[in-house]
Length: 153
Image (cartoon, rainbow, N blue to C red; front, side, top):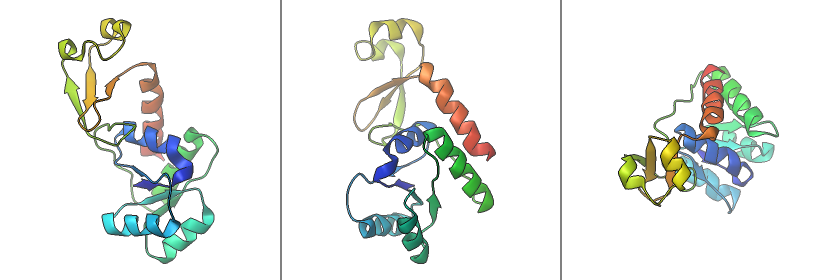
């Protein structure tokens, strides 16, 4: 997937859910469309004009609707269901850079997460690209609830 500049928050959440999402922060619409064509990515946009252009260029695109990320995810699920093209996530990715995450044993995680987090959590993950650490904190349940909504439509 490739998310346009208006969907940065959604892109981060989708990455955490396991979707490979390129976040197109800035640039011309035609460059984003070319990227989708070249890399075989589905365009995520809330811009009706961009969606229309992408569709004419035969880019697989989802018109994302809603003001909140929760509403946007529901919109994506409905679109995928109506197109009969399920959204299938992989393993969680880095929400910042889209890198792959690897599991890190607790002793090796020391010093990176805050000390209280090391005591309360058992599973830690590090981005192989940027080194950022992740754990299944309070936000995890919210993200997994959103992920279930994507799968159910």
